[in-house]
Image 1: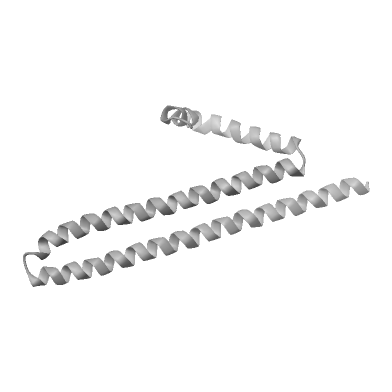
Image 2: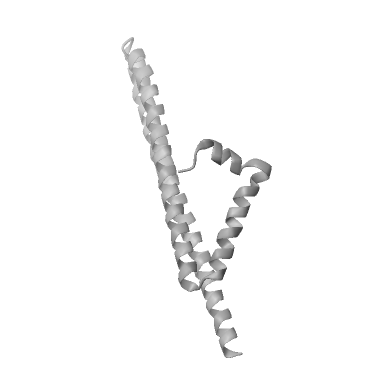
Length: 138
């Protein structure tokens, strides 16, 4: 696993090391056959899905932490009066709405991102097969 300084070194000079690594992966993929390209696309898709899942977890944890902070403040205030208890219930409803909306938006975003990745992979695979067919007929 990369350390934080290694990540920062990758960002030096506008991310030149990261671009070099990406072009190396692209060259390695072009040197191999369809199986190697399928492996690269599969690993990339799995990485994209994993990072999307991690993003969803982070959103849920942030929403839960915010909810916990809001609830703790409002519980202490709700002990003061019935009016604050009503405000507490209203805040809880708002928090439930925010958590639900964030989770739904993240799920939709993950679905769209995965769909686009699959679409571009299908286009690339079909173009590659057409080029292979054109080369084989000549």
